Length: 212
Image (cartoon, rainbow, N blue to C red; front, top):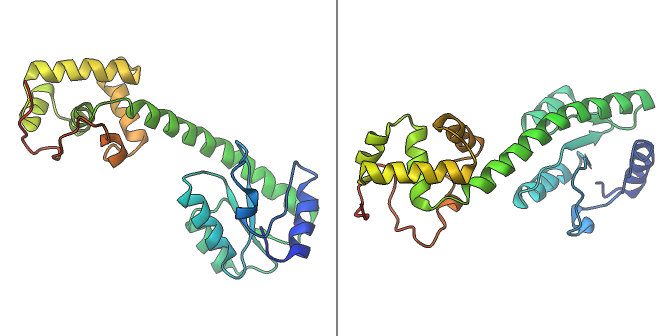
């Protein structure tokens, strides 16, 4: 990604030796047809890096971002990596340098992609829970026993056990430890988990009038 077409085409030609590469002035040019996996090289000039980061975050998608510049300062490289970019490319550079950067990206990307896949799976399973089941799981994840869950949520112990069994079944787990691990893969406080129509409001720890 670079508004300077000469630079964008130059880098794209070098990257095409390692796979499909497509130069654009803006990610808007890609449209909605995004590949399952890709890396985004973006010019670290004129705010283009910030625009790409915002574009990716606003759409909730994950791709490794690698900024490039002709003569980046060490401070700038450290600053961008702290903000979550995968690496930094001093472009133009030698073929050996480009190859080394791509290898480091691939190694890290494999790990991050696996983590992202696990998180997507966990979120998908958690969204099958009802808001009350989310409450129960959330309270359990804080270390509460079934009896303590019943007290905190103002429901009977029998109802808690029914919810626990439903949670295990929906999350495809066998015990509390596995259920809590899934909950920690995502933010269990995520409001999207409470979007079910039978949610009557209230926060964990506030006693409500629910059927026992």
